[in-house]
Structure formats: C-alpha cells, structure tokens
Length: 264
Image (cartoon, rainbow, N blue to C red; front, top):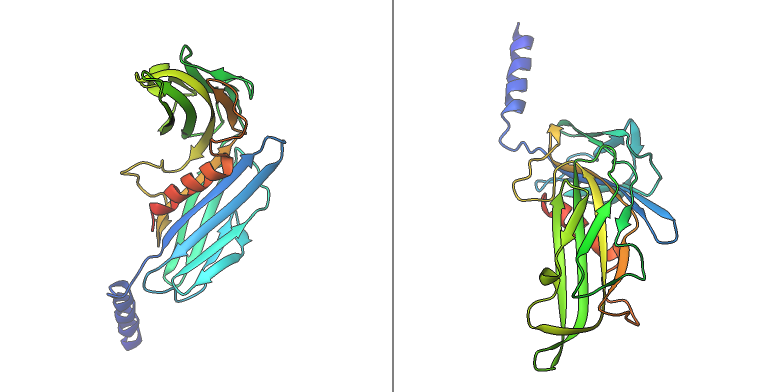
C-alpha cells in the first residue's frame, strides 16, 4: 500500500512539475523543380526548448529515423535531402524527455504553371498579367510570390525604376493582375525589366497570422509539406540583359523564414 501511495505521489509530482516544458517543433518536407528538370528534396525538423533539452530527441518520419544535422543545448535540427514520394501521408513522431509529440501531413502532388506562357513573354502596360497553374492533389492552399522590376520614364521624362511584389496565400488555381497594379499612373513609358512568379502547393497551417499549430501530444508547433514546380520567368516592357528578379532559391529562403518565425 505504501509503495502504491509513493508511486501515485511521484506521478502527481511529475505531472505538476513547475519546470515542465513541452518542446517547440517546427518542420517541413519540401520538393522543388528547376529549369533543367532536376529536383531537390528536403526534410527538416527543429526541436527547441528554451529550458534546455534533457535528452537527444528521437525523430521518425513514417517510422524512419531522421539523423541530427545540427545541435545546441536548446535546439536540435534533423535534416536530410533524400527523395520522397508525393501525394502520400507522412507521420512525424518526436520522442523526447517529457514524452512524445506527433503530427501528420500529406505531401501535395506534382503540378505545373501554365501561364505566363514562357521566358520570351513580355508583360507591358496594355496587358493583363494572368498566372495559372494546374491543381495539386492533396493541397490545402497555394502560396504565390510574384515579382516585377523595371525601368521607366515619368511624365517629365525622368528615368526611374519600380518594383512590384505580390505575396499571398490562396485556394484558387489562378491570379489575375491588372496592369494598373503593376504600373502606377505616373509611369509614362516602360523601358525594360523582368519578372518571375512561383507557386507553392502547401499542406499544414498556412503562413498567415492566427495560424493554429498541427503538432499534438507532448509538444506544439507547425509542420508543413510543400511542393514547388519550376517558376515562370518573363520580361516587363522589353527584354533585359541581366536578370533582376529573385530566383527560386531566394524565394525559398523567404518563405522558409516565414515558416520558422511562427515558432521562434
């Protein structure tokens, strides 16, 4: 009887331990296509505890153990670049000192952008820019990053440059951008410029204020699965000698930064 009471007291003490900390978990599966047809993959998960991690977490994805890539006393990162299948579910399990946390995502299927038509396309002041893409199986949302940069003359024939950026999440498979959104009224003549657009197919919490995490059990945080087809590149006004618009890697760094900021 005494042993039973001691065990119950110990369990109660552990349950209400004021030093108890559930770790923050942030991660994503990412697939990206390039112009040359090559594909890169990334599986990355961060386990973070401000009070310090009391054991090295064990991270598994569909029962496959992911190895640590980077560590500090408050943070372990698990990462690799092994290929994985699309339009399939992935179960994340994180075992740590306080218990187990878990999350489930579906990797969206492959898709492609169909408009603008190609690298030789010129978007001018008389045009309406239409961005379209085929649907992705299993997707929950799309994130579009559209960028235009060009040189122009104003009404006094002064030279200047202008940049336009559209960065948003949607559920449709198209975006229509009227010319007046890209070319302000003081732009009289567009000399030259370029633009690019990429679209992510995402699963998991959107990158928006008010997002709720999708990590359950002994932990909290956000896990996403993202599939990115090859971007579309085009000219603005007239062809330009050297590219100005950010490439896919720069846009990737931008959105990955947004994903991580939801936890850190």
